[in-house]
Amino acid sequence: MKNIVILISGRGSNMQAIVDADIAGAKIAAVIANRADAGGLVWAAERGIDTAVLDHKGFAGREAFDAALAELIDGYRPDLVVLAGFMRILTAGFVNHYANRLINIHPSLLPSFTGLHTHERAINEGVKFAGCTVHFVTAELDHGPIIAQAVVPVLDDDTPDTLAARVLKEEHRLYPQAVADFAADRLVLEAGRVKRRG
Image (cartoon, rainbow, N blue to C red; front, side):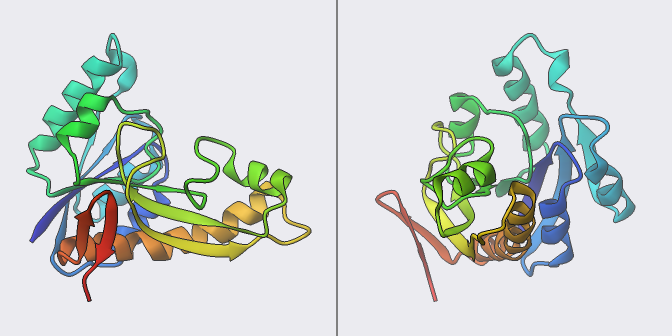
């Protein structure tokens, strides 16, 4: 059984999709937020999942917050840490501590459109396809070995909101599958690339 800790900052819709998937071989050990008003905390607590809040504003800097966050996470003995709308840029020390067991989902087809405003930028660039990417987290923002991607068309009348909604549906399908693949030891990392067994 793999222990999973999920980090959120808001409603945690991807966290909910992962929990609802009831993944074989995976136990959601905790949901941790950096904001006390994160709506996903209530949702997780109602389902009997341990929750915790660690407010980044209570720390002198990024390194101090990340050190305290790692200590909190490690109390749950995680096999995998899942970023599900966790709106903090993590330090290299934190990322390295969880090397090859820290994953994120980004609302673009990486390596395109890293950072914020991905849907608006995709529309402005005139791309015909957008999507989402699950990847192992490295110290470089929105980089790291790609685990899985899903593609959606960009329609002529799309707005950032309509495109985001279409991509989010794919996120809710893709992220639980990636966690399931990790839990089942189907992911193999070789020379910076992720291969899937079976």
